[in-house]
Length: 263
Ligand code: NAD
Image 1 (spheres, helix red, strand yellow):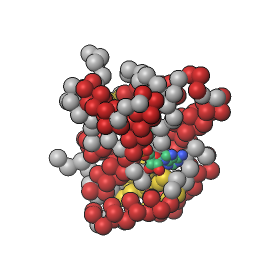
Image 2 (cartoon, rainbow, N blue to C red; image 1 turned 90 degrees about the horizontal axis):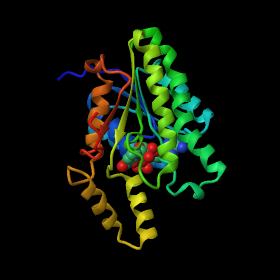
Image 3 (tube, rainbow, N blue to C red; image 1 turned 60 degrees about the horizontal axis):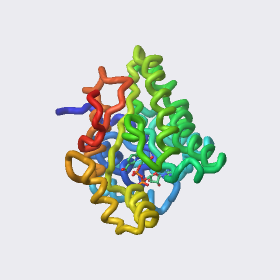
């Protein structure tokens, strides 16, 4: 299937590792021109060079903190200087800490909102006018299965991602006539540094082995295993494609069947 991504400009946020990295790799393989970003410059450049070596593409890598509006502006400006436009935006960033309500200070809530909601708004604000002008755009937000079925112990993530979902559903209606689609992809348990870290937290709290935490997750998933980032990236790439022009306003899980809801 020709996805029509050759030479499209894709900005993939938080792409030095994990889900963002897998999405960046897939876009590069499809011939898109790529802008990557993350906080840690060394990590980011290593990933950028690896993708360049494996795919022959020449991604532009920008070190920036997406929690800071200036960081987002820096990423958007660099993308504009390098390629003149952004056709595809994948919003993504690190996940908030785990713990029950009492564990989180007002400051922790503000940080989670800045990191996981405001970064989405600021990235969108930076690229949406150009997409509307050109009558073509794709905005894909990385959220979580927590939107459909809250995950115990992740109250910050459960709460803030609901706001992103409301934002995206509303924006989708506002921009659909301009050829811009807005969708969310909800990762289930997917093997990344974030999931290793969450497993470590559970292991420490419950006095169990880290792998026992993974086994418990796997036992809750009909597929019987956690996901691979490439499986997540496959859906994001399709939603970014020419072929996905009539899909907008949705939230789609990639979760091995974990969400038990009918629709
Ligand atoms: P990860 O920790 O493996 O990777 C996160 C990436 O974000 C890294 O590249 C990191 O450098 C970057 N990053 C973190 N904070 C940043 C900031 N302030 N500014 C710029 N870049 C920043 O995480 P992941 O597993 O790839 O998860 C990505 C997102 O998906 C997270 O929000 C996570 O909570 C969510 N999620 C993940 C899973 C899973 O199982 N992996 C499940 C549901 C939701």
